[in-house]
Length: 285
Image 1 (cartoon, one colour):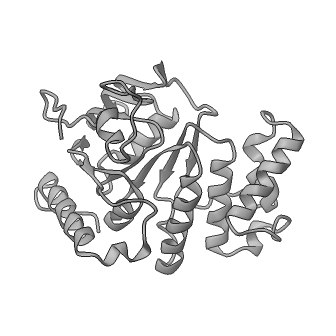
Image 2 (spheres, rainbow, N blue to C red):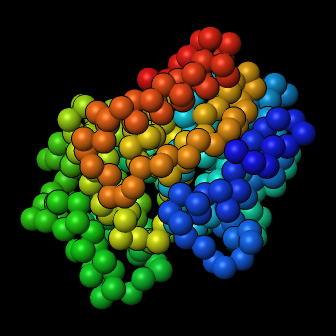
């Protein structure tokens, strides 16, 4: 991967990302919509959690960050969301500094984030209440509820839904504002394997019809490979971005892709990169 900084941290350029789909703006170097330049993060007077992170992501790309707990990947996600300010460096979205949360970004969390006192419909429309008129809000919410397979459950409350159904509500609510970037923090980690696999496939189907860029944090190498265009392993103590690994598989992704030799070979490469990053400690599956 090109664009290696003096510190050895890999920079994932917008051009590199666009190669994954063959898209181009006609320029030699398409402009990134999200850019991290020399970003550091520390809490209080403690040591750095994230060190000199450099990353540039083009539009409508799916990028996964993988690594063990403590490598700074959720901190990085929270900085892009605007929840946490960097200790040093800059984060730019469409060329403007990220100074706080905004409607151009949505987050899907690992834990259930549905409001238990709201119905499915009220949960999904939550982020649209003050930005979209009622007719458009009703249309968009109905469409998303249909797409995530919850038609007929609009008036159900979260306690009446399974874990997989509640996660579908989370996904629909995150996509409802049509954010520029969707941030996903271990969104399917709490689900059983069959439900998790099914929701990964369903999410990719929904995303394929959108214009969103996705930044996913996960411990799960297979999830990262199946869903993303690029996987960025992270080192730890402090957190560092390693080289971005291009995922060469065409979309839409066949569920049987996970069993192919090419998929497993790339999985082994990522395991090795993580192993090297942590002095042999591994940490992702």
